[in-house]
Amino acid sequence: VTKPPRQHWLVKSEAGDYSIDDLARDGSTPWTGVRNHEAKNLMRDRMRSGDRVLFYHSNGSPSGVAGVARVRARPSPDPTQFDPASPYFDPGASQESPRWWLVEIEFVRKLPRTVPLPELRQEPELSEMTLFRRSRLSVQPVGAAEFERILKMAGA
DNA sequence: GCCAACGTTGGC
DNA sequence: GCCAACGTTGGC
Image (cartoon, rainbow, N blue to C red; front, top):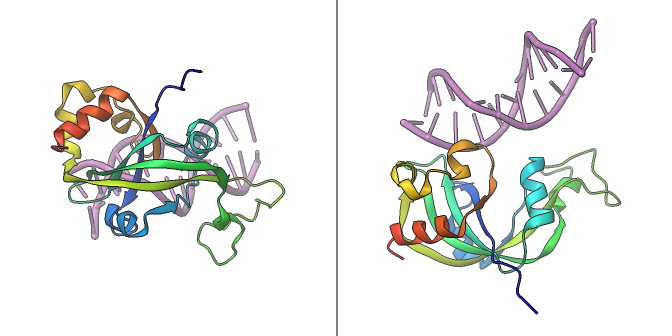
């Protein structure tokens, strides 16, 4: 039996909203609130338990990759879509046919330093990253070589 | 805080 | 089905 190839991802969060330190404290967290279909489809259909994830702080000064996480467990419906009190409530979703899905994200480590976006942009090996072309996609694939390169840049 | 990019909504 | 208006994201 051959193992499936390891996949790599990047997820974004504003540090003031939910940071790598928050994830370290919680251990793991359901990645709620994604309301973009492409990002949702990646979580529902492509992510596998054990996949490695770069944790990116967006809208920061500077923005950048701050930590490493991993995917845990199977995709499940995002419960916030059913909660009228949640800002992520979706009146068009139902328990029978959920519209939004998530995976659990588990803390692995905080990087020795946050690798800032301008530095990522300057690195030739990273020139094809989805991050630069699809800046608003909050869950996105990352190449294995890109992933390793960024860890090196962080001094990890 | 500003604004460009871009995804979504809704009128027609 | 087109596209203008609008809201949100995220870099700076």
